[in-house]
Amino acid sequence: MALALTGLRLWDGESEALRPGRATLRIEGGRIVAIGEGAELERDAERIELEGAVALPGLCDAHVHLSLDPERREAVQDASGDPLDTMALRARAMVAAGITTARDLGGPEFRALALRDRIAAGELAGPRLLCAGQPLTSPKGHCWFWGGEARGADELRAVVRRQVEHGADWIKVMATGGVLTRGTTPAQSQFDEAELAAAVAEARAHGRHVAAHCHGTEGIGRAARAGVRTIEHCSFASEEGFGSANDAAVMADVARSGAWISPTVNIGFARFFAEDGSFGKFAQRMNRVYTDLRRAGAPFVASTDAGIPGIAHHRLPEALPLFARLAELRPVEALRTATSDAARALGLDAETGRLAPGLAADVLVVDGDPLADLGALLRPVLVVARGGVVRP
Ligand SMILES: [Zn+2]
Image: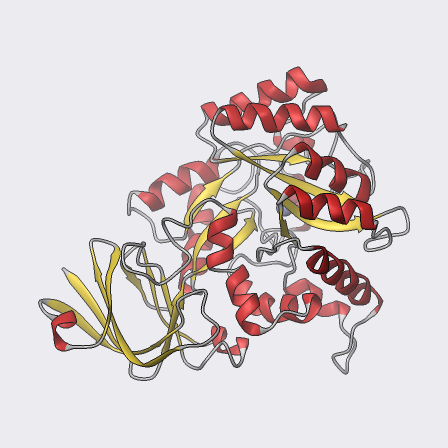
């Protein structure tokens, strides 16, 4: 049956301002079929009156780990991960918060892919998922315990093929060490440029894009030049910490490569602000990284690394205002990073990320105008995910 959401103010995912006046959004067969005024949009439809509420495209979190329990510090090192029913609860909480698309960037086993398929089949509520399976990493490198270890180009290609055989949508590679794996450090590179290029070529041969986990500046440059599609974290770290090695030449390489920056700014970043709301030292450093990258011309997507300790899966809406402040984004720019730009980065722009006829009916309706105040995202009224209504 058709669905008509009426009385809406509407942001399409791209425009500078809300659409003037009120609009009805007509949904049929999981798709938006019309946006406009007039009674014919409600014909033979179930009508939901939302007078004055604002509709925007459902949000996208470009970096999550559904198998990880954010309440357990040691969960990250767990080689088995949580059972599917626990992951399903996380997926449900995400979609109820307005997150209708997410990219799962790895975990042990391949359970996120099973969850993806059950959500796609309509058996479980949750965001549309893109999954990376086991991240490629060096022997005993970052997140080695998830099973994606590879030494040299040939082994990297083989691990890429294994992910493809399991149905992975994306390939994730750990280009540098990480914070949460003992024996690795964020600044350290795990692969040389030729090895990363081999992984990208193999992924491309199978129609997959590559997401590269990168903290250290050297690894960021190698990943960008190797042709990865998204750079996760992008911390410009040296031994002196994050944001301590903002190399202009590497930033230019990143911008030239066309890679998207996925900065994983989450609610945990609130601790980097002083009590009066001003930037603490870490926030100052990341503010410089993000504004330098933007000035160089690199595009951004919103992401949170949800699943790591303390970062629940459904809290992207709370993270966006922090990201906006750190990257000096206007609300509309921050919202694009989580909607239309995210869809472009993930190769889903023909499917979602905007409110337009023909696209999937992924809609977040909130009380208040998020273009004026991103805090409105925390007042969801209704969520529609691929045409299915979710009550927050
Ligand atoms: Zn991650």
